[in-house]
Image (cartoon, rainbow, N blue to C red; front, top):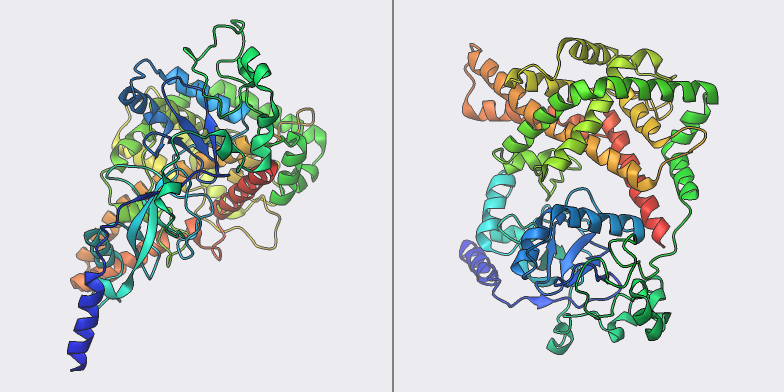
Length: 541
């Protein structure tokens, strides 16, 4: 009888899992402001999710997909240069933090504690995993998730470990990543008015986004650069005809958040990261001499090695899509218990690959050619052998050589070698060439001071991505070797023993990426990036 009662409960819960309720539109509010930059497209920026939104389709648009999306709306002549100009307009004029990669989740999102919905996008009914917060909109996806991730302890069927939830996705298509949100049904009338950001809607925005509302209509008509975000006056071109030819490509920003002086924000960030203490522990003369030497080495050798590193990164990004999603999630996970909902995605566009490979080339040159000039006083001796390997590589290989898979595997090992050792807890923050490279990239010398927090975060993002993609391919190589070794043993292990051994090997291999007790330099990069993001957020308040 107890078994039948349990079966009835499971069937009743399974019957209630159907997610056939129509989607609802989350109305705009303080998260969103309009961007009147490209004629024919109704665009807005959501500062909570850090994405560009189409106000007609109500979907997030990656910058690289903007020309294709514009073509669907009849704007056929949008070029890559126009997209770059839009990004510059957001970064420099509006002081918007445009992420390097299109995000799958809002910033600071916690899988175990769903947050507020993203305004301007649809919300729909979905399912969430009670163990790790994974969200989806159909039963088969949840069943596949539980079978693949929780098969060891979800023994009574996936419905027992599943709950209903409201969910959203920042992107569209088959690769959409869903996340749970806190949401209550609203009257249908209040959900249909997100075609334009009207003046009534603007009055509900936060005060700092509404400073442009005080501009008189006469002034806005006389000078298009003073147009507030809600002004729907049509513009025939990106460059207004009544403006001088040498003015900006897009209309001037309508007074966004009051900018904080870069020096104040940068110095505060330098203090919180420990970089300021590291720089001030040495004489100004020594630091400036070292910066000049690094610049000399970079200018001399970068043209010879950057093409090779770019070919390596192109090869890895092209092959990344063929690897399992579980592996690509593991490299982004915060711990062995909490799996990331995001996956490591390939870079989009040749320009991104070129930028990332350039930064990695500079790091390799810094570690291999400038190692005798390092100013690190607490250098971790565990990584001395790695510095020698980098130097040997730079002395042996040139970009003119035909790249092979064996060469790419060697680069994989060199890149992950920056984090395969532990920093000492009782010593100062900067203990390795990797950390020193980031610190000196942030510090521009006694005359220029510290760089912006945005550039600091971008540098960290590029290095993190290169390390993560190298970890993925190094693991594939090491796991194949380890599996061959296990099969060659005279014990002839069973399939379950083989699986358990490979699992332990995987956990041990990815330990430098997220294990705080191991305390690799990658943990420093992760903490520095969070401090940089916090500084950018504080600067907008």
